[in-house]
Length: 83
Image (cartoon, rainbow, N blue to C red; front, side, top):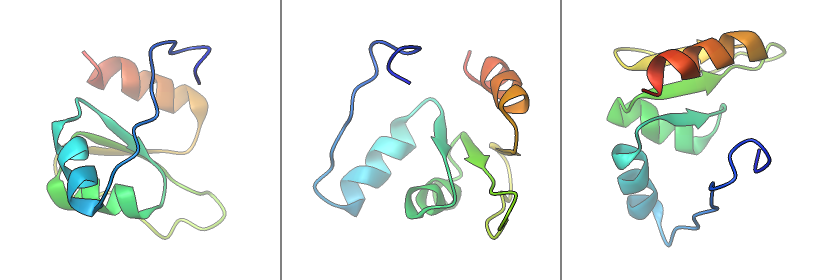
């Protein structure tokens, strides 16, 4: 990822509140079927969910949320949403 987004930085957090604040302030949150995505879902942040084709046990509900299975679809969503 760093090869494609050279200025990306890992941002450790001290607690879940700090993580939620970062997600709420992000222009676009991209996640998988994990706790941080659940936070983004609860905040209704602008979010993309990488869904597992083998075990799709998380879904997007409501506004500002999108899900994808394949790279091409992911890239088209990022281009559309990250303006």
